[in-house]
Length: 170
Image (tube, rainbow, N blue to C red; front, side, top):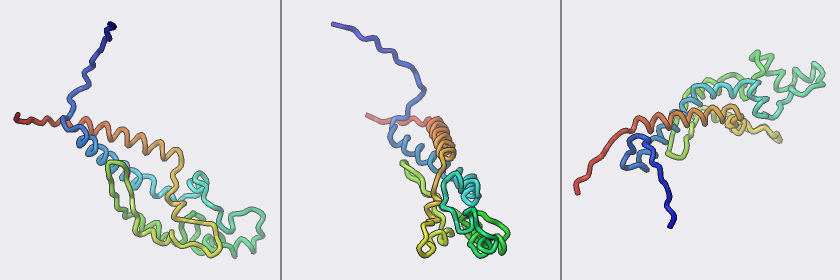
């Protein structure tokens, strides 16, 4: 007969209803992660740097080798002439202003940040391959890492906060 040695390490108080406590902590952590995305990463979607990193489809006028006349007739040239910018996902800036209001809904398994003001991102050019709503949703690896680290930290903090003890009469 072989004996096994078991070492028990104290990890602090464990809530009696661990599943419910974990779900509540996970939901709170996902909500914090959604707030981080909305506060810090939402506006990056409209920058050319993020567009390059996320692989946005090139717009007419962004391809090299155009004559000046072709450029100024293109989408990018007209946008530059009228609004003085070449930012992706933005024409007049109306959508960028409207996505300042976001609705964060969470479960224990994930988070969804809905932007009702971003409906113009659903318009597709006739015969084009550009899907602006899909481009808006793309996360680059740095953002995924940052959101994951934030979720882990928020989950740990929420679990540490839950130090409730319950009693039962038997």
